Length: 83
Image (tube, rainbow, N blue to C red; front, side, top):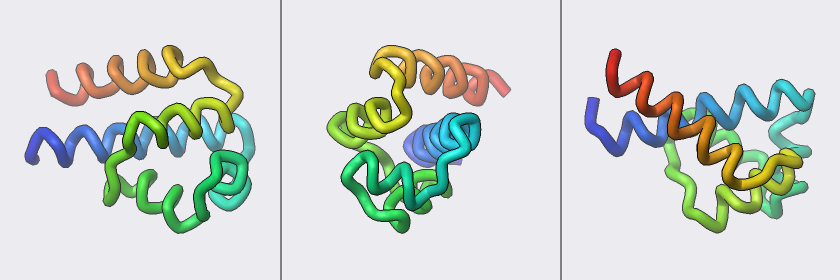
């Protein structure tokens, strides 16, 4: 698997997990972050990679500090890279 592809897949997995912890639908999260449901679905499937702006908007919509979202993502990415 290509490194960029792994990055987007891991981010999608983290995003989906955090969204489900809050019991948010893709539509609710997308609307709260200023995006459409389809964009959230593409991010979760790893078909799109987020920009910093997107990550900031998603963190705010998930009621998380940006650093926490980044930390969770970084930890998962490191674990995926080692396996």
